[in-house]
Amino acid sequence: MQWKEEDDLRQIKAAVGFVSEDEYLEIQGITREQSGDYECSASNDVAAPVVRRVKVTVNYPPYISEAKGTGVPVGQKGTLQCEASAVPSAEFHWYKDDKRLVEGKKGVKVENRPFLSKLIFFNVSEHDYGNYTCVASNKLGHTNASITLFEVKTTALTTWKGPGAVSEVNNGTSRRAGCIWLLPLLVLHQLLKF
Image 1 (cartoon, one colour):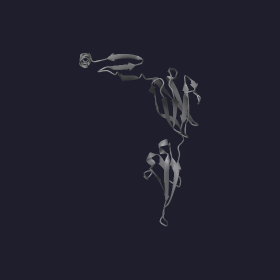
Image 2 (cartoon, rainbow, N blue to C red):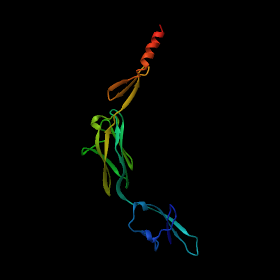
Image 3 (tube, rainbow, N blue to C red):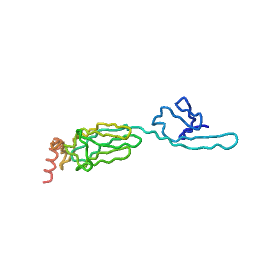
Image 4 (cartoon, rainbow, N blue to C red):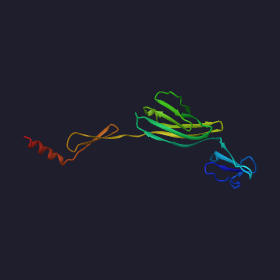
């Protein structure tokens, strides 16, 4: 009898923790990376080989693989994401200042998928900025990550109607920058019209 991993059909060897003496396969110290499909092949000199496939699922507690902070200007849409791997799938909960965020809070929505949770702000206000905690849990355990929603200042450039005049707007303040050498040309142009 011979056992093989279906993905690459390589023989399973005892050196990596697999024992295949009889009609069973014992995987000692199994890890989540060893999940997958295995193939058992039995043969003798009398008949053609008989092949059966077995799916091995390894249950493990969640671990958060990605959780990044994001910057968003006031009044814009912002999203915090928390990605976790777990079998069975993780359940997600979000907290701010040790208070659990409840689905349906005005202007905030939680979208949960089996391995990803999103905290969506539809119109970010000053009150929304700060640290959030994403908690991923299943029956085998839980883990958490801290994610920051921070303010990003916006800068806009506005062009004025007039030769060489530009206004830069940054947080409500404005500054005019012009080319002084264009002023005499503008005056000369106006004088030539008469």
